[in-house]
Image 1 (spheres, rainbow, N blue to C red):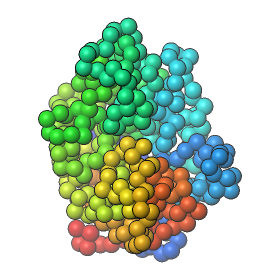
Image 2 (tube, rainbow, N blue to C red; image 1 turned 30 degrees about the vertical axis):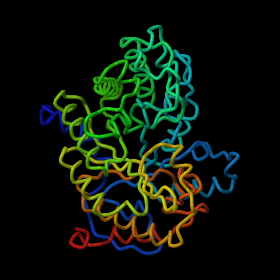
Image 3 (cartoon, rainbow, N blue to C red; image 1 turned 180 degrees about the horizontal axis):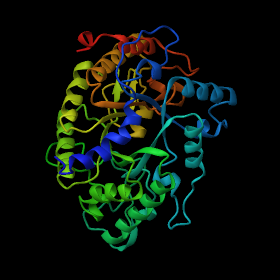
Image 4 (cartoon, rainbow, N blue to C red; image 1 turned 135 degrees about the vertical axis):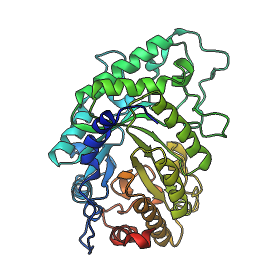
Length: 409
């Protein structure tokens, strides 16, 4: 348990969370016109990850101007929070070394879009093993013999892992500090929530707590605490969260508990837990999500469902990982014949579990606005189809919002 005083804890958590949690709970009825943000008003914000076409209003090779316009209208009508899907990741916002190596225009457009439409902003992500340019880890120190000499692609990475001469601990800490201070300070008071460290937990058995990333190899396990320290220095009022996936797995959620307890004992300024919830139609059940949220809630921090989607593809339905390549390829066998029914039942179960834990859950973010712009688009994983029309699962989720607590529990 963090030894912060009650007064300090209130300043750090309660004040900024007032904007996240909304007004006091009140029963409401739903009809065909009820939106997600209306249905869950008073419980938690409902958000979506958006891409550059939405932030700028400009079409690209995949989406026409009319489709982008429809998606923007959907975002404005259904959601009250947005996350930048890619444009705040290190590789996009700081692709080149040094203070002149930043590319702020896409992230600035995201922030301007959110402010224009009154949407809560989440920054994603400051420190991650993936989508980080090689220059961040490069230096003059030879890599150890146990490193990845061939630069091969490893599980959880989108491209080969950097295998050249390395930065020292001091050099990498300074690069991290400068990056976090620059990015967080630029959007201070605008971006209310930050994913400070993303996916640091190991996916294997209980023997290893942390992923063997270059952050861990070069800096050591305290890189996580340092990242939160730097973010808090840059914006003391921002809600800082740790974010990870597959927390439905009992082994991994216990690793989360170990990590967060350790950080709080060190008085690290961590204010929320993000559970990604990349699920599948056959594995996203009430029981699994309920168990996971029960364990996470014991930590005493607000819970954010950060990247929710439910894949309905025949192939790969048992995978709940967050690796991009694996999810893009998992469409073998096409869609199950009763995909809509499966998806509806799964989303209904997931939201019943979320509503059971509504006193802990403060934010639910879908990883995409509709199926066409989802990173798992072959699996039709969201509540709105590629034409931004509601699917049966949408209506089921709205119904859950109006159920009595007795029925949910």
